[in-house]
Length: 349
Image (cartoon, rainbow, N blue to C red):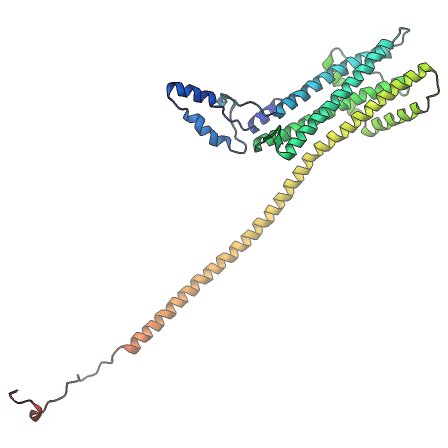
């Protein structure tokens, strides 16, 4: 089954905060005495949480963060494991055919490829653990990560956890079928295909039909059966040792598979937290609306009280004005009448 990763790449590209590298532009501007105003203004835009920039606007993108090297290592390990699984599928089909040819060399090659594949999955698991540790501490290789880089790191953890889970599941299904072939127990023909891509696709489709508990239980039953056959001939002991190693490899990959599944379940936990925060926000908004309505009522009451107080002050003022105003009478008060004998001498008036 072909998978289109174009939309995933575009989402990573849009999420990553592109900061312009303008050291070279500063060197060029020092020669001609000019300054790139657009580069200076781009620093403020780079501080945004998730700037949406078009691919045509990116001129001198900075070096990718250090965890991109880890992601490339995971891609390389997954590509090598796919090649190993294709080679194992061919060897399994070859050994499944009846014949009298000595298959010792093929069995050694199968064992070698199986251990290489298991070691590759273990290295992928360690790389995912490093990415997860960087996401939790928000630092990678001694450098603090921004919000945009943390978003990319979280998406990488989830995407590559799903990739490792799918690849390990294909490997476990293939190993389980070969164990059944070695045990002559309900053997199903191994998938045959014209090319490597069809082989991986058939393994993936067959893996979807296999149950997790069935794979684990069959591997454990195989280990128990092989432990009971230690007293047989040397040929059977060698064959038992090969089956035991294959079963142990399947169990180790099963452990990695469970760890990858736990990482994928974190996405559901994040969605639940978002729903919980949205519900709390709705409750807080309703309570804030009630507080606002109450404040508006208090404000209206305050305005009425101010008007009543103003009118009361006016009434008291006018009361004092009326009280202190002199009374008007019909006759005007005259000064005291001076008698003639009281006048001073020389005053003829």
